[in-house]
Amino acid sequence: KYVMKGLRDANHEVWNCGMQTVGDEVSDEFGNINLPIRYDAFTSDSFGDYATNLEPDIILTAFDFWVPSGQQIVNYIINNNLYFICHATLNSDIIHGALGERLAFADRIVSPSKYGIGVLNNTGFGLKASYIPHGFNEKKFYKIEDKESHKAKYGLEDKFVFLTVQRN
Image (cartoon, rainbow, N blue to C red):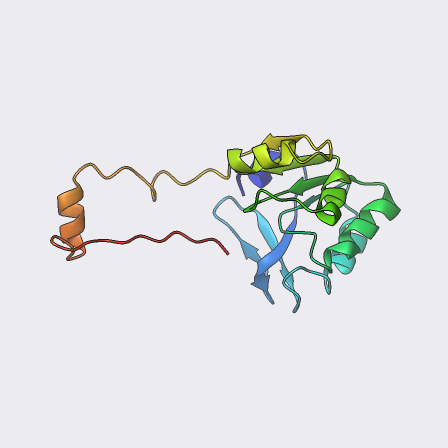
C-alpha cells in the first residue's frame, strides 16, 4: 500500500485487485482502491475484465502469480507488450525451473525481505531483484519500554508467553 500511495502521489493511476476484496471495493487509509474480485482468490475470473476496461500500462503482481490461474496474467502481459513487475514473497531457498522461468519473464522483481532478495539473486536464472520493504505503521507497532506493565495490562505478569507470527 505504501508503493501504491507513492505511485499515486507521483500522479499515476493505480488500481489493485486481490484476495481481500471478495465482492466489495475497499479503500485503505491512503485512499488506495482495491477492486473486488469474484470467486477465485487469484483473480482469474475478474482480471480479464479489469485489464480490458482499465487498459493498464504496467502490471504488478502482488501475489504468488505462479499458481495455474496466474498464466492468464502472463498471457495478457505478453499479448499487450506491458511492463511487468513481479512482487515476490519467498519462504524457500529453492526456486524450481518453472518458477525461475516465470520470474525471469518479469521486467523487474521486487521483494519485501532481504532474505528473498538473497534467494532471488542467487537462483542461477540471472534474476536481479530489488528490496522494497512493506513498511509498518509506527502508531500501531512501537517499542514497549515498560514490559512489566504491558504484561500486566493483559494479565500475563507471571505467565510464560509464546508468540507466533504467521502470514497469509
